Image (cartoon, rainbow over all chains, first blue to last red; front, top):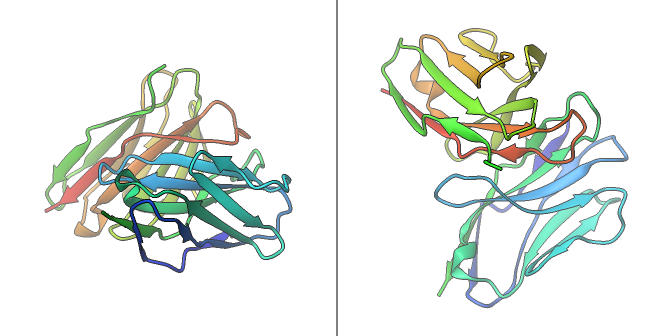
Length: 116
Length: 114
């Protein structure tokens, strides 16, 4: 089974600064999807950014970007110009593109604190 | 287009009672997934259903847990004879087809067993 590892249980960043959250995964598949989800105190899972493994270009969504290293099986999230509203739990997730067994595999999360 | 809806948002049950969690997928979505999030953990897959069919229940405990997605109405996750260890947030997600890239998550149901 695929595994997703987030080795940073907690991170903090000064407002307006940049922070990088780490994620590694283990898979034998060559094609797959990777995601970062944000979970604020409301517990709603909010999609932040996604990456298709076949794409070499790193995904970017406004202040959020990823560093996808396929050979190293690494998928880190960079948040630039951090804002107070970015404070939340962040989960890295993996999904196979197959028509069966297409559930998400989540990491254990990183709790991000933004310091004013 | 309304998102994935789950109810109730909060559910309190005493040990030994039954818990019923409901999930209405997004309009046009016929694939539903249930996940459980224990305190301080990430979401863990439980079961994947299409209308009237269970496709993958590999993550669901063998006893006391069951799920259904009838032809009409919401998907139901049922937990019989709840125990304290069942206290968790239960999330439902839906997708329009089996190979869809994304799943859209509901707000979750927080189950507390006293």
